[in-house]
Image (cartoon, rainbow, N blue to C red; front, side, top):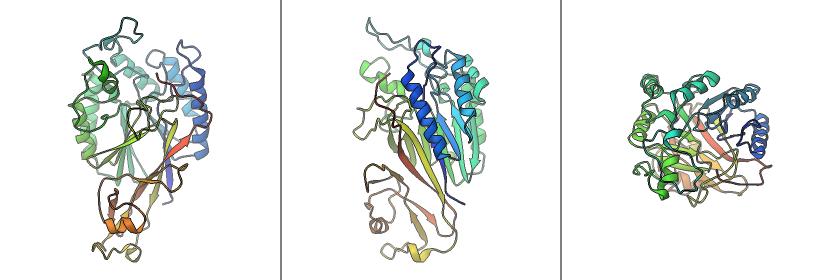
Length: 361
């Protein structure tokens, strides 16, 4: 099988001239990104939410974005973000300064009406399919913790997905991040001003753990999320958790020392290794693992020459890693000789050259 590519574009939020919150520059960013993605011509495009600026209010924004996506020369798959439907569910409001322009948090809770409006334009709120030995799945995580019928429908669908045969790899997309720093961090408190942003961005417990159980049961390698608008990679129990960049604008760039606010999208290269005994090329006499082929999955930042950032979390065959120029503590994955495996390599930095600003919401 020849190498192939898929692209993830998140948080486009182009808005519409018909909307009171329209910002023309964000629409220009989306048009630039769309042109670059078409030039790449990936096998498919995945969008982890916030396709619109005010789709939660204006159906016409959802319909305008669907028209732009339908014109693409390759398939696309989307899940809703909070701008397309409504925010994660809460029973409390954050304390507000008297002059605050933020709306009531409870009033912004996602509703069934909003979710069904999105589904009526873009199709099912959860989906899963297999493309070239990789399963791709997505769902409306804005409903998680809401108690809405759509959440119940999701968990029923998820139980059926667990019964499906495992594929070689599994990639999920969702809108909210699973966590800020650590999978096991406590819930952030909406009533504390210093924790509000973290609360706003992530999935609360116990729902986070339930989702992780689903991901592990379905053989997940990668979970890609939007919402935060800052590039970063976390690792959680063998799963790579990508925070995708925004197409529209950056935010929270000061949260992590290695967070990258550069606007753009993610391009993933997938390569199928040939079958056959290639032991002579990959023997490791030092650690005695001749029965294994060591393959390293990396992400590249092309503007920094020679910098390679390992991704996977299994520390295996350190002498082999040294021989190919990687730190022996780097992360890698092993596959038995003779098997056909998909290797995913992420080129993080397809930047949007027209962008000359960075602003928060």
